Image 1: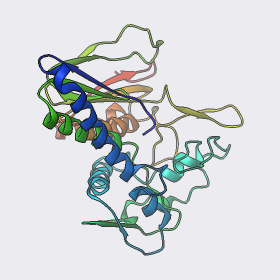
Image 2: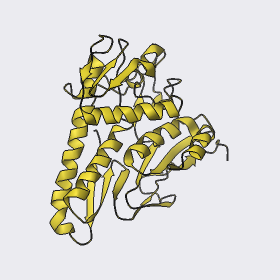
Image 3: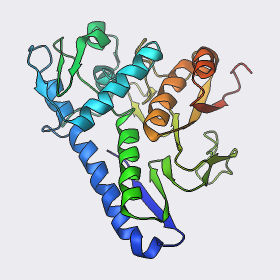
Image 4: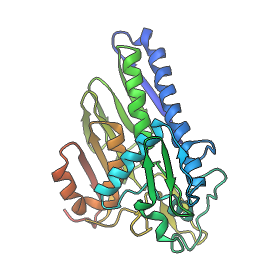
Length: 294
């Protein structure tokens, strides 16, 4: 999934159970990646995207269906700030979402993208099949698939041993036992002191979104962050309350933490407030720039 995964075990049973727990977690991650990868031509996601507009129902497995169903739910609740059809926007801005895709953004960015490709009504999902209604549509589940994979990995690890563990999935954390994480300061270097320490309750998960690590560069030298606002096609971070540098979300599972950290980053703190007040299961921690509102 384009990132590193670290598996940490501690306490009684760690030496005995650790290798088996790690292997079980790795197998669970592979199952989700095989279904949702944008870079494997045989994945469910790639096959569904390749058949867009053909009218053909493509058979899909449970990992793909579960991931897409959650993505569509968050897309609806966030008012389109999260959108699993964002792949054409990502590609236009220099983030390839299929095998052999270009890594250099065009100077036009997303201005030439047909907005019909982003309509959620064009995604049809039933028990074991999926289709995209419009030609040119393509799925990108990168904002939620890592979370689903982390949750499945954690479930597999729990079944394989009794030791406490923590899965660090590219900075997204989930495990068994009580842990804590230091929030990185996006305004400082990798060695900067953490902004604060956030506890991770037993079984809960933490995910962070920001535009300071992954970016593309257009031929004119413009730098584009990888989190895009599907509603505008522009890089996220400057709307809905000011200059948003980072948002970290604590949630009951990694899939929710993953998806909502992206959606809330796009929305900004002001527009996110009704969602946070309505949903008591997600807790965000914002890092705002100097121009942001209090």
